[in-house]
Length: 146
Image 1 (cartoon, rainbow, N blue to C red):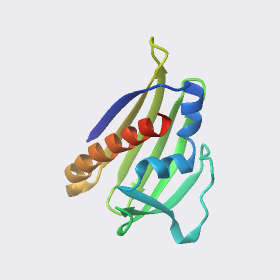
Image 2 (cartoon, one colour; image 1 turned 180 degrees about the horizontal axis):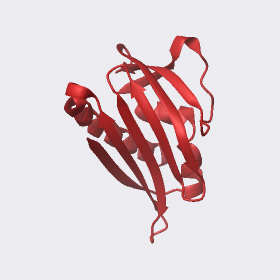
Image 3 (cartoon, rainbow, N blue to C red; image 1 turned 60 degrees about the horizontal axis):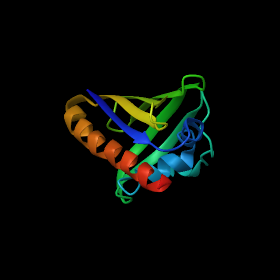
Image 4 (cartoon, rainbow, N blue to C red; image 1 turned 90 degrees about the vertical axis):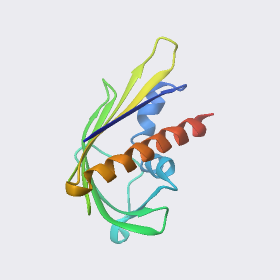
């Protein structure tokens, strides 16, 4: 199943593209619904890098364990401002995430998340939660810049 959410942002496209590469940004916009913690105390970098794989421990609402989540940064396309990840977790076999930024005519930018999900019999439930999570993340990012 696929999820697609977009929002307009009033910030420079360059700054927004740098933000989506920061681990701290991911943690801020996801909390408190999902809290990321280093897996087995392995430190996480400040900035995600293309080709690197990161392992985190996920917690729903900060205290309900969701297990290990592994994500690889497949591509950071600076020219087209697209970042793609290949992910999987304890309950999720496939989580392919594409983040893109496009300039709009009104000097804002359009930020879009596209996620492909495969989680076996849990796919529908994960899809519903993903709809909620990504709308939360986008709403929180908007609040952070205003």
